[in-house]
Amino acid sequence: QFSVRPSQPLSQDEYRWRQVLVQNVKRYWIEGVLEKSLHNQALIELGLEERSQAVALSIGAAEEFVEDAGRPLPAGTQATDVFDGLGAGRTLLILGEPGAGKTTMLLKLTKTLIARIGDDFSQSIPVVLNLSSWAKKRQPIAEWLVQDLYDTFQVSKSLGTTWIKEEQLTLCLDGLDEVAAEHRNACLQALNQFLQAHGRTEVVVCSRIRDYEALSERLRVKCAIYVQPLTEQHINQYLEQAGDQLSALNTVLSHSPEIKAFAASPLILSVMSLA
Image 1: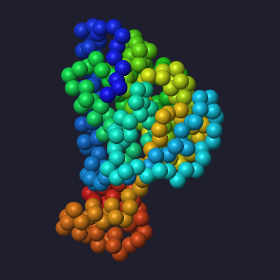
Image 2: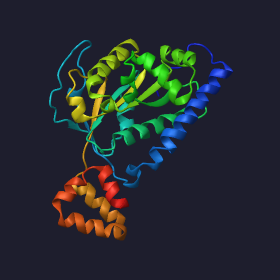
Image 3: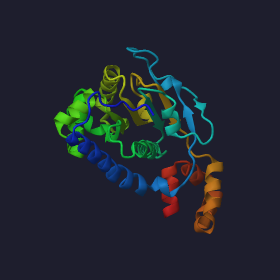
Image 4: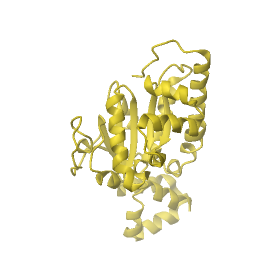
């Protein structure tokens, strides 16, 4: 674990607020979103690729996105495994198609990081926020974080400011593609400025790959991974494991290549299964 600890002993009040923040993240994002997600209904091991060309190679570079076939990671590799391998100041970009399971992957990573904290709330606290709200005021990311922590989790602005300044949070930022299109480039630039100024802060960002490809710059993170679509083998294995419950769906997919291709999205396959 590479969590940054506070430079000063925690007061009883701050320790309590850290505990409250962890509980709120668990209640809203893990129990309320992840554990009720359609993706959890289709238990399929998603493949990952490393996309080295999706990250900025040097500070200050304004490079266009270069098409990259990607390097497949070993079967069974999870986002947490990749994140753990990045060392101190870990930063990661998760890319994928619509419905590929990016948010689910982000929340599973968050769940693992929270579990590691246990009862030691002096460690870096994982917090999930959605970047879509950044476009409202288009502030520096540090200021946006303080405001969003207050709006979403009722963390006081003074405490939020301290946590950001002292790099006490692991930021799990979903929805770069949900930022209004006309402000998306500016949001990425603001993220890069934040990453440069807060080099010890751990950050994970999610985005649809096509929206990311359209941006004029790349994110200055250590690593980017791409969530692969389901293969025909994945779909067949899933249907076989489900047995009679999904026999009708199996019949439909076996007779319709077009619908089977549509099921390459874990979200769509989950919807089909539940239907």
